[in-house]
Length: 427
Image: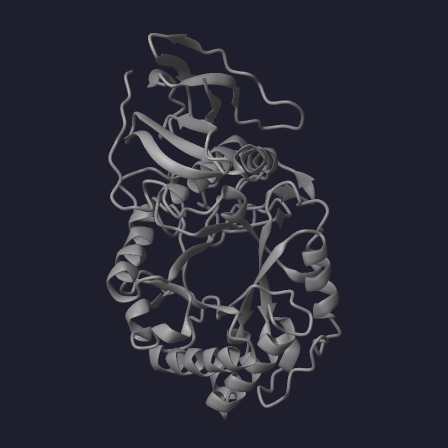
């Protein structure tokens, strides 16, 4: 299989202004359940679900008393300890845990909450522990007009509290993609109040009752198309704003299905496939005009239901996906996406990453399929020398090395659905 350079669709897709992968790879987590030391190998960026109800109880007229939540969680202790451990924090502020009819003075109360939050936690604030705030996660019970009012009011409060704090929308899509995402056109005219467009996307091949997912590169599903839709909207309507994918992931469990109920026909994936598809999703997202991607979820309890087996750990014990993502971060952390050497659905994906030193390169290649396929390919490397090559690992310890042969300025490489990493240096 001969591969050749493929053309990108934009300056970002050709590697200009792309983030280093250590600033691209993120993970979703939740408050006191997070074990900071355990997850250091897999992500530098954390997205935390921050329930507003913890701060205000069920009365939005209450004033937040940071650093304390009203349920006695000390947010400063939590967030500052994460920052001290080397993480960067994005708080998804879930106002929707308080029902819309409880917000009797919505504009005022939302403004005050945003102002207090930014003043305390923002980059210029008292404790400087939160980089960005998302105004809502998936506010399904809020109609478009009510969400716009909430967003505008809280965002204005954040801007006054700390202009340096980045503001993200809730999960958005172009049009009514699903009940979980708001139509981004509902925020048109408020572009000065957000810095980040926030996307939740899962690679569903089927919805209820199976919730079956497909491999991330599958051209038949909406997975990448939904992300590209937001990118296109941004390029036309909100130039300069960032795109973050704040939820994507795959469920893998060792447990049998429920015998009856909503999830009797639910379909998960194997531990190996979860690892493969997570890593490949990060790689594909990095090739798009996306600034960051947070995988879902940090830990699970091995339950065979939707989103209940998505952890990198199972009862805080690393799954194969943990080792695969740790290897991804360790290998590519100092690199940024540069270009696609090959990108052919059902055949081969081979992406080249460039080290921040501007000289060294790393190629990641794999079969973009979900049927266990393997193949061989030939990569042109005329001006580079191979330093080493290894396979994405599924367990602790040193990854398996991959045997390559070079001849005539080309590199022969076996590939399968677990990505192969090839380090190259200038001759």
